[in-house]
Amino acid sequence: MSAMMMPRQSNRTSPCARAPKRTRTRRSRRALTLIEGIVTMVVMSIAIPPLVMAIASAASRRASQTLATRARWLASERLESVMADRHSTTRGYAYLVPANYPAESSISGFPGFSRTTSIVTTGPNFVAGTGYRTVSVSVGYQDPIGGARTLILATVLTDYTP
Image: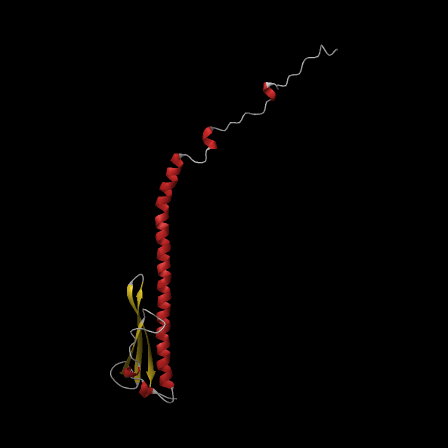
């Protein structure tokens, strides 16, 4: 065949051989519609406040536990001091009187805490009598959740020396 007889090739491809047409719609090209944005804002406004309140409540409970631990430590410190005085060779059982342990309305290094020591002489049944002293230490503080709190630790000391 001669060159004149060959069918001419066109630059166009046949409709069957074309690349598939993109089927994206206009909506899928946009990031967010107005309705989707409003729905997101409504859901967030409902979900976030309880979450923030839960976090604030947890922080308050944590602070409350820390204050209670400090109060226990302050009460234990005073009780140990009284017990050390009881077993001291220079002070002894006779030294355990309320006048030697005055109330502290403010404890150095622990603002907001107060401490009192009560010493009561009792008998073996914790009624009137002698030979036993009940020592109670009260520590007061302000709790961020429940207001004023008081922690009391107590022990019994005797006049017995082995």
